[in-house]
Image 1: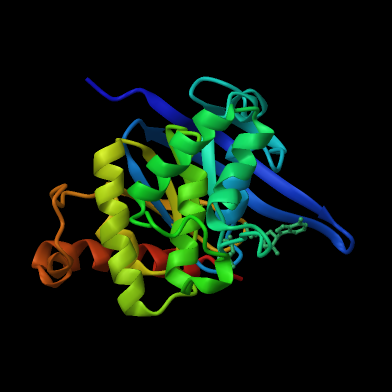
Image 2: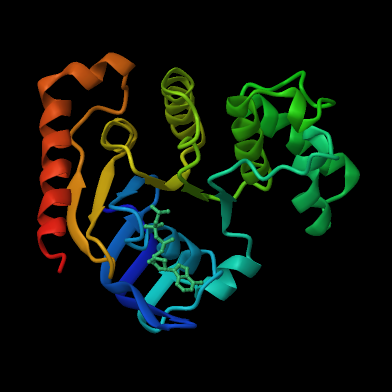
Length: 261
Ligand SMILES: Nc1ncnc2c1ncn2[C@@H]1O[C@H](COP(=O)(O)OP(=O)(O)OP(=O)(O)O)[C@@H](O)[C@H]1O
C-alpha cells in the first residue's frame, strides 16, 4: 500500500508580476510527495525550486493548477502548522540566545513555558546541540548555526520539513557531516522532507526521490526513485549504484538545458 500523500501538485503554474513584465517561474508542475519521503529538488539557478517550496508554505500563491498539503490548501496547512521551514541562511536573531531563538515561534504559537522548555530540549537533542542553549548565534560555527535553525523548524514537531539549500554555504566536510546527521534525524523522526540543493551528490546521498527541474519556467524533467538502501554510510557515494543515479540526474539536468532558448 502506498504511503499517504503529503504534497500533491497538479499542473501547477506560477507567474510573478515583476516591474518589467511577467516572469514564468513554474510551468505545469505535477508531483506527488508521500509520507516519509525525502525529496530533493535539483535544477539550475532560477528554475523555481524556492518558488515551489514557497507555494507549499503559502508564501506565494500559484497562478493556476492545484496543490494540496495533507489534503489541505496551503493556507489551511499553514494555519495547522503543517510544516517547518529552514532557510538558505540560518536567519537566527543575533540578540537572542539559541534557546530563545528556538522559543520564538513557540511563543508566537502560544505554547506554555513548560511546553516550550521541553520542546527546545528535544529539538536541540535531535541536532546534537544540547549544552549550547545559552550561547548566542555568533558564538557558534556556521554549521552549528544551521543546526540551530533546523532545531527551530523541528521544535513544533510538524511532519513536513521544507529545507531550502540549508547547507549551501558550508564547507564540504561540515556539509558531509550534516548530511549524515540529517539522514539519521529523518530516520528517527519519520518526517517528510522537501530539500532544495544544487549539489548532485547531496541530492543522491539524501533522497528517496530526486526531482530534476529545467531552467525557467521550472518544469519537472525527471523524477528518480532511489534504489539505495535506507542505511547510507558516506562511502556509498563511491558505489556503482550511487554513480549510476548521479549520472541520470546529470543527464536530466542536461536535457533540461537543451530546451533553453
Ligand atoms: N518576487 C518575485 N518577483 C519576480 N520574479 C521573481 C520573484 N521571486 C523569484 N522570481 C524569479 O522567478 C524565478 C524562480 O526563482 P526561484 O528563487 O524560485 O529559483 P531557484 O530555482 O530557487 O533559484 P536558486 O537556485 O538560484 O535559489 C527566477 O527567475 C527569479 O528571478
